[in-house]
Structures are given as C-alpha cells and as structure tokens.
Length: 597
Image (cartoon, rainbow, N blue to C red; front, side, top):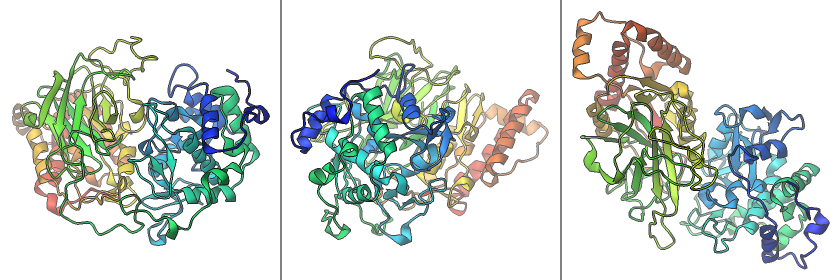
C-alpha cells in the first residue's frame, strides 16, 4: 500500500498557519489507513519490524533498552512487544485508530516495557527514590521513580515529538472510540492527561530531529497510514502550539490532579476508595489475575488482585468465548461485588460452586468449566463522565487464562464474521491481555501458580510487574489431573491473609504491602486419597517451594512428571501442598515468605 501526497512539500501545502486545529484536521483527514493490531495480513508487528529494524532485516531496535533483538522474539516474555508510548490507561482505547497508531508505537523489551507501565515521562523528582538505570535491563542513562520514567537520551526527543503528535491528532471529535488526549504538567487518568509536558518540551530541544526519525515519519505515511507527524518535519511548530517549558515549582497542580514526589505516610487502616457503584473504578489490564483453577466439580477459581479493589466495584468472570469483538453466549457469567471497605492487593478471593456462591451473582447462563480445557476471563465495565455504568461500552479486561488443548484461538477478522467456531472450550485472547496477563496453559484439569520471590528485585517483596512477568512463564505453573483440591483450605488462606498497609491513592500501579501468597499450594486430595496415602510407603519430603530457586522448582516439577507413571503423583503433591499451606495459614504471621510491594 502506497499513499500519495506524503512528501513534506505536498503534505503541508494546505496549511496557511500552523495552529493546533489546522494541524489536527490535517493529520486526521490524511490518516487513511488503520492497521490491525494482530492479523494474518499486515499488522502492527509487521510494521514495527519494518519501521524500527536495524537494517539487517533480522532485528528490531528496542526503544528503552538501546539494543537490537531478533524479530523472531516478538511477543515472547523474554523477547519484545509493542509499546504504546501514550499509555492505554491514560486515554488510548482498544477499538480506535489511536490503539494502532504507528507514530506512538515502538518495539520494547518485554520486561522493561512492563517496568515502565504507565509512568509519566520525566526525570526523577526525588534522588533518594530514583532507580538508575530505570530497570536492570534498560539503557544505562535511563531512570525511574515510582511515578516517572526517563528513557535513553538518544530517543527522548523522538518520544517527545510522538507525544506532541498524539495530543494534536486525538481530541475526541465526537468519536465514541477516541478520547481527547492532552499533554499536561498535571497528569490525570480520568481526564486523559499525560505528563509531563514541560519535561517533553525540554527533551525536544535537547534531542533534535535526526535523519532516522525523518525516514521513519515518511515510511509511516507512505506505506502504512497516509499521515505524517508535523513536529518531526517542522520542529518549530512545537513552541507555537505548546508554548515553553515551566519549572516544576510552576506546575500549580491541585493535589488531586498530580502526584506528590514524596508520598504521604500510609494509614494502616483501609479507607473506602472513591467509587462509582458497579464500575471498574480505575482497574486496568493485569490488576486481577486467576492464580488457580479447578475444572472438576466443584468448579473453583482463585484470584489475586495486584492493586487495591475499590468497594462496590463489580468484577465479572466468564467462560464464554471472546471473539475479539464480542462474547459468545453459550456458557455463563458471574459477577462479584467488592464488599464495603474494598479488598487489598494481595488478598486472594475466589469462586467455588457451593462454597463462595453467595458472593457471586449469576449474570447470565451457567458458569461451568470443562475438564477438556476452557478459558476464564476477568473483566469490568467503566463509568461515563456522569458516573453511569454502561454494559454496552467501556469493557475492560483485567486478567485471564486458557487451559484449552491448543491455547488461545485466533480472533475474528471482522465483527460478526463467524470466522471461527469457538465452541465451549476455546476463546480468543483479548488484545489488552495478550502476552501480558493471560497465559495459555497445556490442558490439565487443575492448575496453580508458583511465585518465586527470589527472582524479585527486593525479595521477598515483589512488585506488580515482577509478578506479572513470572505469571506468564509456563514453568511457574503446576498442573494436575487430580479430582479436585480442598477449597476450604484456600478459603482459610483468604480469611487469614495479612492485610498489611493499604496502598496510597497517589500510587496507582507500583507498590503493594505485606501479604503471603500460598499460590504453589492450592492442590489437595479428596478424603479417600488421604487414607490411601497413609497406607503407602512414605516418600522423601521435598524442599519448601519458598526455598527453591526457579531452576529447583522446574527440577521438582520434572520429577513429579516422571513419577506419574508410578502412581505416586498424588503423594508427591500432597507433601508439597501440606508444606505450603502450613506456611500460608497456621504459620502465616511468622512466615511472611512472599510480600507484594
């Protein structure tokens, strides 16, 4: 696909004066093609390999890491993914052109991208709370604190100009799929305001446009979208549209509109979080993940919230298939209302037929997991500007997993195209969860997630990003075809969870306080199996899951698999379960082996 009128002389011929509105109309009217995010045809993956390749045809340049990585590692947890420079949680949707706009998409190392999250672009505000580099694998001249992220010097200007483009390109325009994106020194999720404008203005001056940036701009226009970034072609437009940079002391933000560089002390008593009843209330992809599932009767799913859950928020779970556009309606959906006072991050909760049923209302159909593989998706609905919740819009996926034999299915190319028959065991993975918070596990009846705190930066404390990174690795899951696990023990774990300190409302994504996760230990045996074990020759007791390194965990899992044919898998896992549950319940107050920060 080749678009005409992309030479700078032709492209700006109609602009009499470079005002914000004139530039908006230009870049919007010439945005002639919107690429699919993932497709068998040319998609965002293909475009980024082309636009950000190193010239060899085999590697891409990573935006925050300043190295090259093989194209073939796209979407892998030890590879690269597609970074939205303007975070989705600050106004970029999933169904509009902003989601796949190549002017603000770049290849990024998976782990470094997760560490950036939705932090504002800025240098650190407090040297005592500054990490250099921003992540262990980030470029050496990067930095971050709990709210801010500074990329490598060589791309700071490129990123600034991409953000200027996004501000001008997207202003709502009465399009329900698009929000008015605004650069500001007072960032706000609710108002789609990203920070920090003054810092970006300084980066624009310090890192001027180079030939590679011009070439990329031309290629986006000619080969993919049909529009250009005016601030690459005319850097002088920046000052006329956005003004000059301010000092931090001049930001003049209300406390509610910006982040304090030094968070206030955290009250140990949880306070109700402002909310709209039945809404997401700020929850985002990756905030609630299933950490255990049992598909034998009674069906059971355990969830781990990685952020505080606001009171009265409505959390939905479904085994209906997602097509990429809508849900099939051949299975069921349950809804859980977060109780008064909310649920603290790290405090597990669950669904089990006959045990926690009164906590979950039936929304539709019958939620019944298949032993032949199935999917579980967790989601919520956002509220509009008036606080009203619409179940026909603002769908936000939070987490999920698949145990289908061949993993997640492909998404439909067009809505209602019926390209695929998803049946009762398959589902497409939502775009917002792909390669992030929705693992595809080999078919087993039961699964539990094994968190290794030794791999976290400050063990036993683990951040949300560190947990999600481990969550996507299949080696961190333990599967079994047992006929169930003892959900009363899981319920005990929930009841005895150490609530610790609630997260500050000014810390939306990063820090979680004390809580022990007995995630490696959810499998139990039915009473008859316990009796059989008493008659069986004892096996050596394995080391505690919490004392194992990641490699040791894998060795133990391999040992379990080798022993299945000998009929002693039940005993092996029972010992591990008992060990973990002891740490997770009776010994909880003395054994805070795993903490969430």
